[in-house]
Length: 156
Image (cartoon, rainbow, N blue to C red; front, side, top):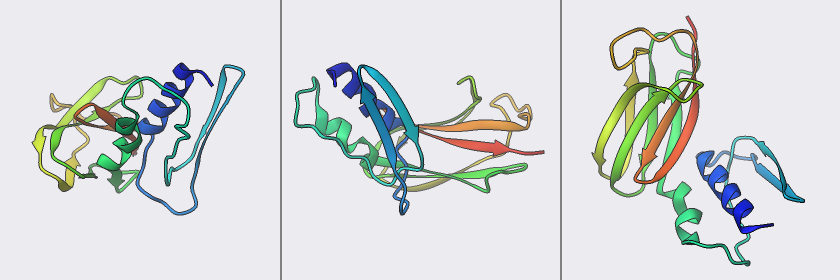
């Protein structure tokens, strides 16, 4: 596997890192330069780092442990939902709601936070106060330079 594909696999795994859930897995197959990726709820991320990959691998290996986006309740929801997350260390936090095209709908948190557990309510409105349409959205949690994303489903 080339270094480039290894880095892509690490980035994908980090983006989809979820809290520990029993008997779930993530499978990444890299063959002949092609990648086939099947993602289910992830219980643990591990990498074979015996070969050389540029950059600080310890940073990539432990990103998922630094914070966790736990998801939202209820899901599906109407008219509001509570998004929960945990920080293992203090950091600059941004929690946004994005549409399926990645456009920002609302910014829920944009400040430095201490380690701990947090819950933020989204009222189903954009930052400008407009009601969001029914459909799928993403909660997008960025802590320092790492990101985790979970799907939200609004039904009216």
